[in-house]
Amino acid sequence: MTDPFEVAYDRVFDTTCASIESRRHDEASFRIHDLEKLLESQYVAEGLKWTGRNSPQEIRRTATIAAYEHVLAEWRAESSKETS
Image 1: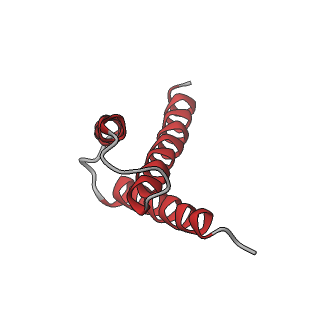
Image 2 (image 1 turned 90 degrees about the vertical axis):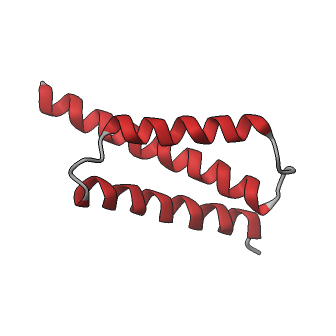
């Protein structure tokens, strides 16, 4: 049996990664700094703990943070290869 929280997390994570990748390629003005700011705002919201554990909002926030961190790490790795 599939955990509905895991399904929701995976869906948000995948959608967020795809959205950020799309912005990277479609918006010339979207830079690493912009993604870092988006991630920072999610960290702030997470620290406020406005929602309870396992709530849909908390799952969405956790998956979004993980997706931002994932794409940011890949982007930084690509950037360091390009400058090497």
